[in-house]
Image 1 (tube, rainbow, N blue to C red):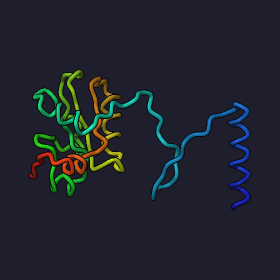
Image 2: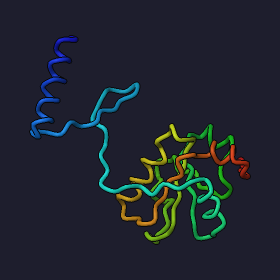
Image 3: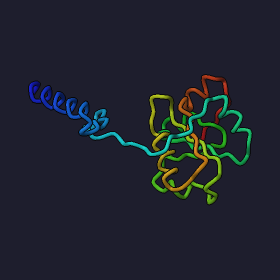
Image 4: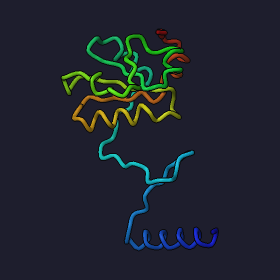
Length: 146
């Protein structure tokens, strides 16, 4: 098996070096290994400080993309729980409305995935806060519980 993988990687590397193909990124975690998604748009990531300033503006909607357990332990005041099957109904009609997505922390990719899905629907003012609710709490910001 090792020899097969070595040969496969060597052949793929040679083909990539020759410009014959691009090697896709692979992902899987504890799931089957598959090609990682490639997004055509870059996501606008914001800091905790930027999120704090946006949170002061009533026209900005925050979406919490955490699990129900993390949501129950605290969320940004006014944030909408987004981890539901009918999430498209939670989006505003105005596709230019400012939307901020967050999940637990920088190790969580749920908010990034949600932000990209919303962007694919045509929303243009989509942001993601990578530090998540844990970064928000560690920075001393107020949070709510259901």
